[in-house]
Amino acid sequence: MNEEFYNRGLEKAKQKDYAGAIEEFNHALQLTPYFIEAYLQRGLAYYDSGAFLKAASDYTEALKLNPESVEAYYCRALARLALKNLPGALEDVERAIRFNLNYAAAYQLRGMVRRKQGYIQDAIANFKKAATLYLEQQDKENCRLCLEQIKQLQPQELPAVQPSHSANAPILSTKEYFTQLLEKAEKGDTQEALADLNWVLKADPQDAQAYCCRGVVRCKMGNYREAIADFNQALRLNFEDAIVYRNRGKARSVLGDRTGAIADLDRAIQMQPEDALVYVARGNVYRAMGNYLGAIQDYSQALQINPNDAQAYYNRGIAYSCIEEMQNAVENYQRAASIFCEREDWENYQQVLNSLEKIQKLSPQFKKQNYNLLRQRLLRMVGGYWEIAERLIEKKQDYYPGMSDEWYLQKVIEDLERDRGI
Image 1 (cartoon, rainbow, N blue to C red):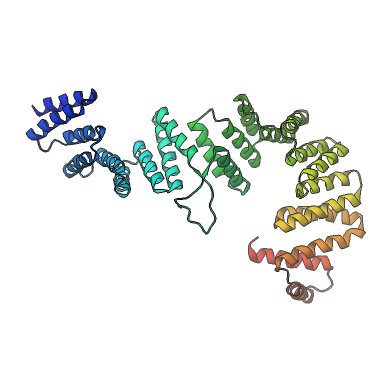
Image 2: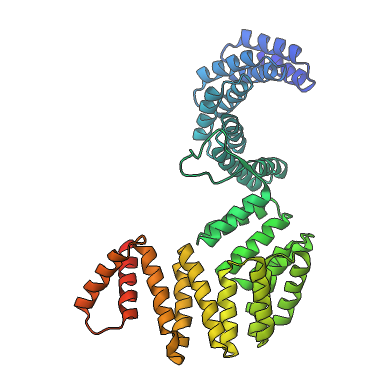
């Protein structure tokens, strides 16, 4: 008999006759007080009718009968969320997840709770987990809903003095999110950036910006053919952006397709004529083709846009050395080295010094200029106190007598780098 009341309750709930459904479930529970499914369904009817407190009470009764009921914990979390009891909702949904680690809806609900609590990064992590599980379950609609939540909540990297879970955490646009991924790849975390982009594209295969961003990351990893395929896909999806053409042009140049590279870079310049990076990229292609004057013209244009573009100075120095204008080459190398030094970009700084050293072997008059660059770098490393640098140099002179001034400077710099783990 209780089954009959229960089934009638299910039918009335399906028809949205929640009062009638509750009455039928009441009859079922009068006959069988330990009927857990009746508590769960009556709780759902209460919830759907807006009686959230009564719904939570029924789910509590269900949990008394089965303390490991995942469904009861999840449903009570929903009711508690509706009652604005965020700590209680979080506690319940975490128990649901503990009993079922693949419960996609529970991760989605936890994301909603964490979002309301202001923990934006935790919310995104939960929506991402839910979307991944929905995708595995081929539930594309719920996966899409989670992805939309993620795109709305991309968090900006906060200053170290501000808690990462601040309730006032700013929200980023999708473009800013991809920018952060590129910055991550620039810092060397290419595998992590690639994994994030693979996940985005698995969830939304039509995301043109994600293809563009993944192409850039693959270029940084040296996978130029795969990168070009990503740029092509971005363009097929009508993602007209100078960044796509600029980076596809650079990838094509590396693979020897310089005609295609120039075509892409010309298109990028038409779309974004104030982008210094495009002129540097096209200058590099011209230089590889032996068109040194064309390359110098592009580097000069880049420097008009950005007078502190160290790469433009460095590459213009290379182009000048190719046409044996050594004085101009040295001046550009020195300017590049100075900017790299100010930024403490020691890898590129050393690359410039190596280029200067090659010229120095051919032209001894540039020896003093190289010495000044080394001195500048050492001075920055000791905080501007030259007396400290002098003591370090004197120790090297005592230990290694008879070496050149440049040698002592370089040796002290190398020792400081080693001690600081640079």
